[in-house]
Length: 419
Image 1 (cartoon, one colour):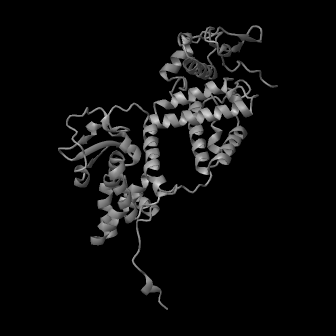
Image 2 (spheres, rainbow, N blue to C red; image 1 turned 180 degrees about the vertical axis):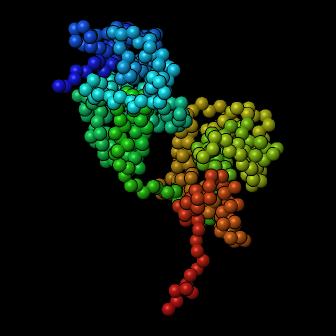
Image 3 (cartoon, rainbow, N blue to C red; image 1 turned 60 degrees about the vertical axis):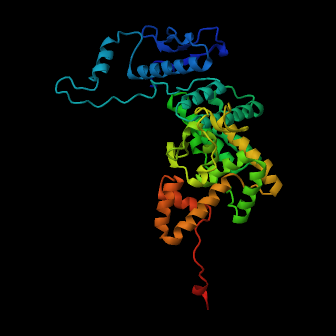
């Protein structure tokens, strides 16, 4: 005969999001006298001291998860559990009574345990909790990317699936439909980025037992061809520099940090006045592959720098109004500002296409430097020297980068294919 379940899965009561009411975890356990499931006392645990939905759900979800674990281990609210607790703490629950050998663990009867542990939590609240779990593990820039993509997803669900209410209603088909919507509007690369960010947030929900599994991991990544910034010819680079000397010296210096010090545009935006050590010709900054990277400042760049001695070391090095000053803006907004300024001052006047940008100067000068280095040494020696200058983390990464920007060219092979 089929055995009755001893307890119901613990649930979280959120009073329809009303923070003025008492939220709690509740469950039922089978009364040994009546044989019926009986509602147990609510578990509050101080959760109602918290004043935001995210905080209350986070703490109550921990209580729910721990309670379910204890119930599965055999803890019974109708019995004295002192002995079971002591055995659990002492690690003796699996010891034999005489010789101390471990006895086989009794298999769990699936009919006595409710495996449905997901909480009927509003999907927007659940995703906010998932994002909160990730906040301390990611950078501010990544967090803003997560927030923006999650916001777009939630708005799309609200508009296209008004029947969806809880996190358990969000299924694989809904996410695939949304990703196809992004693909139609933008590109495979952007669609893949949405998939990655949403999957990361969902993984936080799985890790904290809010959902049973992260199904987004099973959604395939689409093949995408990355867009590449083209390198400038020697004549194009010279003409642009001459133009900026007359029209925008701040933008020119910004570009020289990318060209001569091989900084990425976002790394140049991070610079503060104090990051430059003029006396020792050093510069420190947070790089893509390192929390703090130190490079030399080459003389070709050093002679273009203004006097920094009287500037506040905590001020931003690059600002819209010049060198050294207060610029209270998000890092991504700073990068976008200089990209738009470059478009207005350079790209539009010179009719440059979308594949030319600030990053193109980094490609241009790394290509130029590598081809000069390889003239007097082997390719491996040239790459070893180049890696120290550019700051690539490995030879493999540098070689891939050089291939991507077509920096390596073979010698003329006409003699080899003569008939």
